[in-house]
Each structure stands twice: as C-alpha cells, then as structure tokens.
Length: 379
Image 1 (cartoon, rainbow, N blue to C red):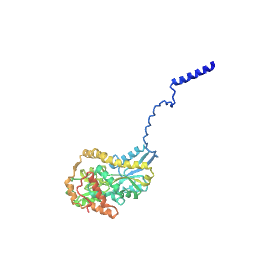
Image 2: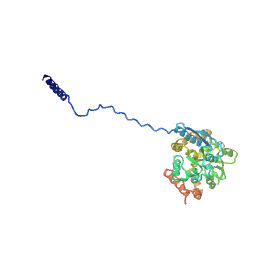
Image 3: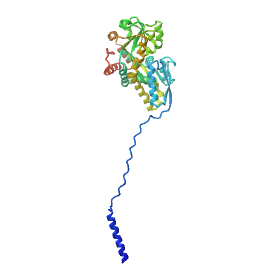
Image 4: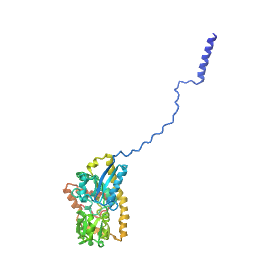
C-alpha cells in the first residue's frame, strides 16, 4: 500500500508541474532570421563579338587635313569603342585605290568592305543624291541632317538605290556650304559675268549660267593647278573641301555666307554581304554610330572645324574674307529657272517620286525652322 501511494503522489506532482509550466497545444514559433538583401540586377554587357579588321578606303586625304575624312574617323572610333575594341579598321586614304567614282564598285564587289565618297561621283547609280542641289540654297547643320534622315524614312527609294548596288548606306553627311575662291573680290551677281567657274556635277552649272558665268567641271584635286595656270577664274566648292585642297593659295579672295547647297552627299557605305554577315547587334551598333556621328558633326565638330581651322588659317594667311550679300543672292535666284522642277521631272521619268521628294524636303526643313528665299519644283 505504501508503494502505491508513492506512485500516486508522483503522478499528481507531474501533472501539477506541467500545468505550472504553461503547457500549450500551439506550434512552437520559429526563430526569426535576418532577411537576405535582394541581388542587384547585372547590367547587360556588350554581346561577345568576334574580333575583326574591316578594310576601309576613302577618296579623300587623311583626317588631319580633310574634314570629311575626320567625320569618317569619328565613326570608326565610335565602332571600335562600342565593340570594346573587337572591331578595328585597316584605313586607306587619298583615293589611292582608283578613280573617285570607282570606290562604289570597289565596295560593291567586296574589294574593300567600306567605302567613303560622294554620290555625286556616281550620278547614274544614285540619281536622288542631287535633291538639295536642285533647291540651290538650303539649311546647314542639324536641320539638314534631320531633314535628310526623315526623307530617307519617308522615301525607301534612297536606301533601295544602295541595295541595288549591293551596298548599305551607314551615314550620309552634309558638306559645308559652297563658297567662292577668286582672283578678285565678288560682291555682286555681275562679278560672275564671263568668268570661268570650277564646279562639281551638273547642277551647280545650272546655277551659274543665268548670270553669265562659264561652268567648268573639275575634280577637287585638280583645282589648285587649274587656278594656278589660269584655266579658271573662280572656284566653287564646299568650304571644307576648298580649304583641304588649299585653293586660296592661288585664289586669295574668299566669299562665304552664300547658303549654297550644303547637300548630304558624303557617304559611308558598306558591302551588303559583309554587313549581313554581322550579328544584328553589331549591325545596329554600326547604324547607330552613323546617326550619332552625323549629329555630332553638324552640331559640334563641324562648327569648331570652321572656326578653329578654316577661318583661323585664312586669317593667319591674310586672305581677303567677305560675305556674299543676301540681296545679291535674292537677285541671283530670281533670274534662275525653276531648277527644282527640272530635277523633279527628270526623276519622275526614271520612276522616282520626284515632285513629292522636292516638296517634302522644303516642307520638312521649313517645319524645322529654315526660311526659303523662294520655292522650287512648283507645278
């Protein structure tokens, strides 16, 4: 009996102990842990690009003496930087591979990967290239670049002309305005009468004939000697080209402010097969760099080049520098036939929307803030 009593007492004490200890049927709480800091997303990296060296060739002198070449160098530097050095260029300058017009064929056939020339050297291949020349004067800088880009978006014929030649156009930059270098001052329209004027392409001659000038088609590299030997009296050429060819050493009177045809004809073009062999990402890098270079040239590098190199050189050399009067330009344009209409009609005969292109060019540039002295391609 004594043993049984002891066990009862032990049982009672155990129950009382459990009750006193707060026995519960709830699930025990887990010990809280320190939250994990979210991982910062990694920035996408440049896609892996197979290293390559592309063959580039320009009709113009190296970048330190020719602005169009400097633009091309800007573009190549952008490509190399944006591909982390994977894509570089074997560069050839100075038109050493053939005549200027042959650079399109050299690129078409793949003899070179990338060419650099003006479409004025191949008018039968690129009949749309002259549209700004048919309006005689036009905007410079950013307005010209943006207007040209918009025309290319609205009219696929621009791109198709390159595709037909097995080419893709990477960038098309406007030249600086056309300026005069002469052996005597030019202040009026009458100063051109009877003078022999060096020009490029067919359209500038159409500007000059109504005021009695005699146009002579001449390659840029020949103009120095032609002026020196008296073959020509006046040079009409984009300001940067005129400076690059040192024409003012023999024709020391410089006349600017003409507003004459700062046309987007300087083209960087690539063999289409080579372009298509690149990945879509690299293709886009090439195209984006082309557009970025155009705007950088128009807004920063071009104006700086004019002030710090062209004007500075001319002033240091003591050349006579003047601006062609606006009223004289108005008088000049008033006696011109509607060159734009002639151009639009010629394009239409070839199956292009000539009238529409001429109209849209003037509309787009007007919307961007340019004021035309007269309207062209009026039906």
